[in-house]
Length: 331
Ligand code: 8YV
Image (cartoon, rainbow, N blue to C red):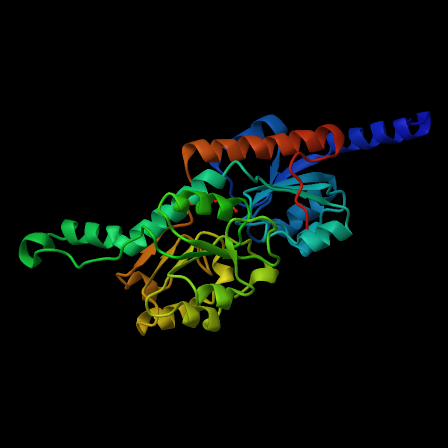
């Protein structure tokens, strides 16, 4: 049972959290940004030269940051926000926030899991079909008026029954596997550890996985732990008949090697929703017809983005009310 003293302390803590300010860091969905400013009186971190002056003036009043995977909060910014208690992240991926620095400073971090799983998995399957069947390429062929002159567009490759390997059989990876069961694709996966009771075949390394499949799908989290996990050895193991699909983070793949192998015909094709240096997509990829390129739209539906916004605000409300989070990240 709480003593009068601890009750008093927790009320004081809650009051100081409520009296603190919310800070928006980086661009956010317009309706989320408007809500933060209108309903939470949020401040907006400037981008330019006035950032330092802004932080000197307001840094010590900030108790919660709302950001996205696009921007995040690094240790240097945390140091300028000494009262910061929570980083509320719009998006399931939080690789742009330094979670270790946050933990050291007692700052909690939340993300938006589950609500985007279906849309990201749908998009991954869309990329598999587009990349193997050449939908975007065939569409370009029709629009360019080439059909009457050139006749049939080139033959493509079957999706049904293709051997699929998934790197990262978490929420999104599992939802992709569920969908591909409908295409009778034998599924194998690589995670740091084998999943007890999984119906899918475990591969002990990304290279072993790539060597045993036709399509390699990346659904792992980003961050330093997975940087260039898909490297030259993995891509070479996937081989000239193999396709790479990435709906996770560009950092997971060695993009330069990917380009080199695609250009040399040592990979059959790629479907990419994410890139190493977004929003910049290498010209070499843009020039390739066997590559499907999307501007990081995995979760980009009206329904899912609304659900992500709602969960972001639930986390913020919970933090402002009692200092806890609804969906804290676990390191
Ligand atoms: C978002 C994403 O577009 O959730 C993620 O990790 O990559 C996407 O759903 C992104 O976080 C918003 O910036």
